[in-house]
Length: 351
Image (cartoon, rainbow, N blue to C red):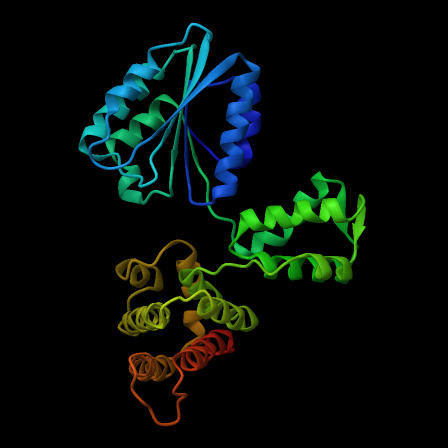
């Protein structure tokens, strides 16, 4: 049974299941979901908890199986928590997890909680994950998208009796806050709590937020692609500065930008040959958020413009590897910024 994070609390109120699986990379949201499940379990008499971390291919699953069927003299009910940081239980782990999932059904004395990282599509099709989904509740906890962050911040402030002023100032306040904490939700949570300690309940001004919220943003090179294709020029510049400050490899940043340009060019060429855009996107394995961005920008990009951007990407490839290219900055990060802004501007151009 699959649930979204927003459905978890209502589901817990209907009755506790004996098997839950959380999978995702957003540590704060995974932790809060796990806390909600544990809290509900403790309220129903699950007084004992054991935690097992699956590390390496030679993990001893017999300990987990033994724990699932044994209770101490001081507890009638227990929480059995199994963490698999790699998301790969291995050949021995797969049948063991299937056995645990089957034995969890109808087991009122043991609540089994699996905590996993974000899983790819192939892993979720595996027999062991299928068993977890069949016999229990699975929650995929996705990272918060940048566009959702201001509203998330507003909701969290509301929980502690605070909010921003109405109108444009309030929106600017939330956008400023989001810019300072993007990609670092745990730190965002801490900054929100700090505002609760610094200021009384009620409205927060932009000045108060600017003076209190630290710059704790962390950037993912693969999120840079979304910002570039969305034409978010200010965010692109901020992300590149952040990636450089965090010590990200310029070669990896270039690869991300160049791969987008190559993919756009291949899809455009296929469309010019007569293939419909949806077919061309599938052929190039473009889907999800990236698919929506491609659908929006491809009509704005001519084949000649994409050929020019591809040539620019080739030039910057040389720069990040130490070569000098006429009319381009010699500094790799300055060259990357110029390339990224050229792509972003082209994606924003009107046909």
